[in-house]
Length: 255
Image (cartoon, rainbow, N blue to C red; front, top):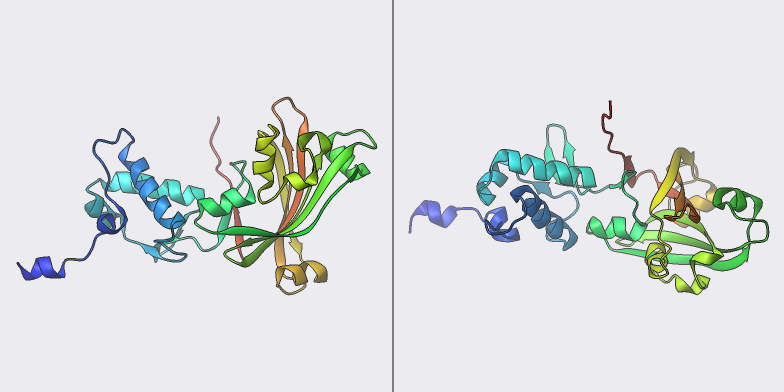
């Protein structure tokens, strides 16, 4: 056995799994799947460096164009991030995409992080004037309210306040972990949403719940979700930690 063989480095393909020429999926999608699963299964961790394109191309026996296309897709998803002059790394900050309608739990799981929530309250009551305007409900209509502190891998990430029309769920107790999962079970998961965001400074109460300092920067995101028939299904106001979140949006030239 030659010295070169003894000292040959384990390749990413050896560690994470090889691509299949018999798989009908394009090679770049196969490579995305391999890397995505490695992140989700925590074989690749936050801030881990991804080998250069030329090394990945050699490891997986594909072209550098294929590698670049796969990496571009994972960067768009927020799973990977490029650092100028340093390379490509598994993202540590969460990138919240405005181009995809997904729940907090889905966002965290897709990035290989473990979500959980601390319930502050679940309640039922009559709609307020602000909620009525946002949800298009008549005065006195039944709504369910949910307030949670959201975590990922044990770290506080956001405060979330959600109000849902009474016709979307049988009771507040129908929501256990994921709000969108509960809505999907009743056939009332939103299919489109309007979102707006602005920068905020956390109040003393918000800072205490999130474990940050009063006045620290945060992101306020308001979402109104709608069903396919046009009825409102969700009014959510979330306060995200500014040191843990980036917001990204994909823009396309439609001219």
